[in-house]
Image 1 (spheres, helix red, strand yellow):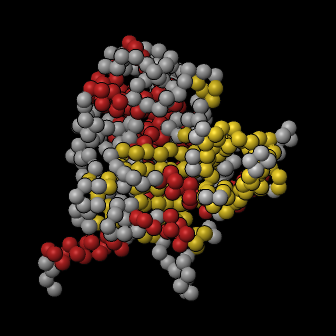
Image 2 (cartoon, rainbow, N blue to C red; image 1 turned 120 degrees about the vertical axis):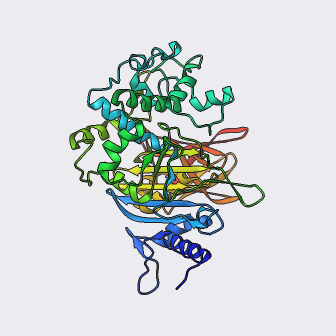
Image 3 (cartoon, helix red, strand yellow; image 1 turned 120 degrees about the horizontal axis):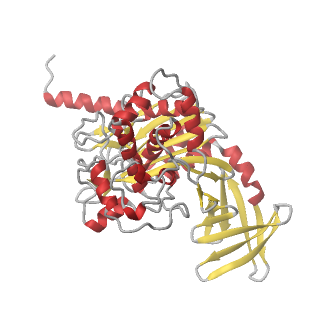
Length: 467
């Protein structure tokens, strides 16, 4: 049989489309398959807006104890060639890259090659005088006070998409004029710290940052589709292209082909490869070269140890945010750059992790991961939420509101907005739309009511009258 070029292209498009979902099995009765007791149909509903060949979208994995229990992809990877997203699509990971950068620099700390208490200027020649008191450890935790490198580029009129290497970025940091605060006294998220960490790895190891991470992590772990993109000319198989809504068509391309910065970002990976990284974190991976198991255990413990700023704990370790959600410990990081939106969240107490990678600039993968967690951790969340549920009354208005629990979430029932979803923003602090709630407790820790504020009405008190 003779194949024309158009026939071959059509076959390739069919193959790409066929790779877009895993697993895609159904029961004999035609009902959706279940994962850890959750119907896959419920998961698909979260990404329903992206399940089309007319929109970029998201690829998602759910892990349990380091193993993939669900993965799927929704939407288009590349409009030019009609390629759909799949579990092999290579995504720019944005700031999710930071905890891999932290692992690389942290490995040198553990090996005694990099002193986290030393001043950065002890390692980098011509380190700026305004930052002479910044230590290596403060680079990990965003407590250095360094101005953000991309902000400095904006002031200098330098396009973020320019082809620059780590030395070029160092020149920009050198041209900064002052710190945002005295090192170690506060927290301020800055990409400059992670650019500097990547440069320190290169100085100490005398290898490129991409080579070092390949040698110590990616190659030994079998992450063959993962790399730090420090060479803009490098071919990336199955590369996803990023898009923003708008333009003469529904979407316009926002991918920056010249960008090759590493450290705060720069990592490319796939759902399949990330399963190996997740297995590494849970101790389910075997490897023979690179980082040793003893080093790995110490590194992982250090990465999730909160930093200290001005004597207070910071919700950030080495490249990972450390906090709580609905009473459960939560570790992770999100990212956003050139139209890629990425998010990774791990609930270590339950052993679940969620990774959502999107190539659409208006996607919100952190919300998607929260919705996934609400499905898989429903019982744990509802146990935590139970004390908040009940009827609350203000006698002066008079007005009553009921708080209910549904599908692992807390909802406010009010006259003009029934079943308003409530988001936890702090300890005993919640938000529903533009309303802010602060719950009050008695000496035994029982919830007795809340104060609600919105617009010009502030601290309106409601007492709890029933469970």
